[in-house]
Length: 213
Ligand code: DC
Image (cartoon, rainbow, N blue to C red; front, side):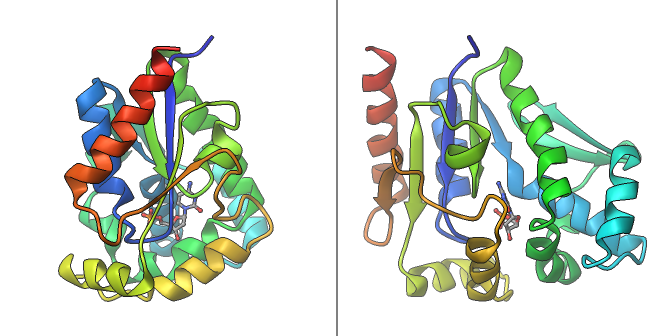
């Protein structure tokens, strides 16, 4: 049996990354940001002048894509040419193309394998859009973290980012392969009127009660 996998899904700017990081640190689990994995592929394609709609080219390139999906300390990282990608992953071109790249089924199955590998030997808190529905459908630890559109837009602006999250959410929720969705057995956590600490406490309590059964 694999170690525990905590699935945290939700739309853009719902607060799920912050919450997932804190939950991971509280339990001593590894934090995995799957959005960064999709973003790294979108960044690499853009850098090589490949449009997100050139699906045949993308399929051909994927097996040899020189990105390394690794770990530094207790968090996942993506490396290119030995360097951890950070600011590159929120470049405007990446924000604009990532949800189109993430809708390509071959990209999803390529990353799905890597995402599951992280959980082979260690407990993880993984955040994304399809973690509870597709990546770890059998885990009992599933949380769907959301907030009102107004609160999410304000949180995005506070991060200094101006990308259109509603457009991206529409793309993410309407694609046919592994769309953004609340798994039927996921606990819905609306963070609009909660502090980060309250959200973390709520999720941590649920995990603890399930771990002790
Ligand atoms: O979480 P994020 O905003 O960094 O995600 C970037 C994009 O990647 C987002 O538009 C949806 C996509 N994504 C996905 O399709 N599946 C995941 N598990 C994680 C992210």
